[in-house]
Length: 485
Image (tube, rainbow, N blue to C red; front, side, top):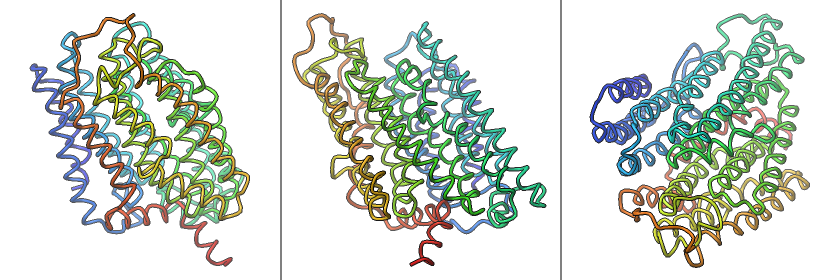
């Protein structure tokens, strides 16, 4: 059944490319999104431990990440038909095809049990997501697409080199192909330490570029700023989640080999740098979509910081992956609605959104409160536990800096958000015909509702999956901490 998670979206991509009716093509997206999510839930309900010899399959970690991506895709897919109907001047054949292709390739990455296959899947997600950035067909979107491709290609090349270094570390330890993740972890003590360390540094830089960790994030402001909101949401919560998963697989191998302390120091450093870098560029930011791009840089930093701290923080870093994806979809899609109403995404032209687009304005405001860690939304739960995990394990400096940066980012973002949602709409801008409608706001309300529910209560099966996933990533570290106690 798990093969259907790959084949269904890829076959649907071929159908979408062949269909001549734009309206029918647009509705293929939510239909496939629901089907994919249904298949995934059935597969996860029958989840079992994968054999060590498996080349493909869903473990708890891959299932968790793919569930996040599948839910995010459904939210964006149900938003897509109404949005694309507002853009009749744009042929969305390539857009629909690439969106479905991305879902299929993300499913391949989640199931890959070999670092080489995972690298191929990650590279192909780059290729299918690049045309999405060029959807507006103007000079700025073309520049953003090329920047995404060039910087992403450098990053993915470094990730390949790092993967080869890890393979050579296994060769030096007497291991030969097939080097599946499970085999590498079981024989971690045999791996050559110098080559393993070099491989992790290269994969961290390579996959970190795809995540958008500072200072490797330079493609993000342009790509997120010049692409439609639904594409921005999938980039921020989908492509970055794929890169994070690829990095976690390598981190688990390094930790199993006894080099976890070395890897964690690098992850904490990149996490702190990303949050501080984002804060600097959020101050007095006048472009609402670029503001969200820097927010994405911040939250990628939170993810790797939590993994670097380990234990409770690592578990809630994985939870934060879901929280960030849900709230980012609300922010990007509501920002897209506001942009369509004002025909601008720049202050001071975009003010008084609560008057002009009241539903999208409220969603943007609530999304801002959620993403900056206000209770009772899911990001508050994850950020609180990441900070608690840091402080309770003796990382007083890192935990304190984490909290200070969160406070600074809240203040920096609020300066722009308050101007966007409050006040009187600028008389300098002619109002476009766009008005809030159920089709362009209901998916956002669902996403925000899910973020609210997860902040208060998590179903037992999801809790069990999260526990298993965190053990996959951080099991070696946790076991050692328990022995020491």
